[in-house]
Image (cartoon, rainbow, N blue to C red; front, side):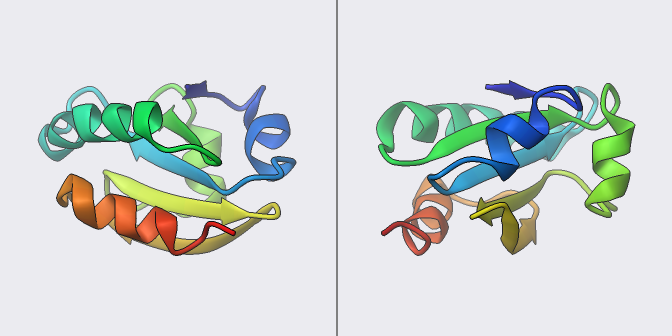
Length: 103
């Protein structure tokens, strides 16, 4: 799901389920590595929302969440950022981080 300044509050901050947000850019090599992993998880995991923010197209969101390097992932729960991490990782690691916030 593509997240923008227009739909971020309603999709992420008002969500009842945990939300994983991937802050990325098209020119970022590690972002390209993580993109298919994020998309696979979005198709496999239930009870979560997974979305992506292009930092070049949505600089206000990148500033709002103090994104200094990409890819950066933030897990939101109940409208609050509960975990933030950067860089590339395995699908299993990313899934484990999300599963820690389910329930």
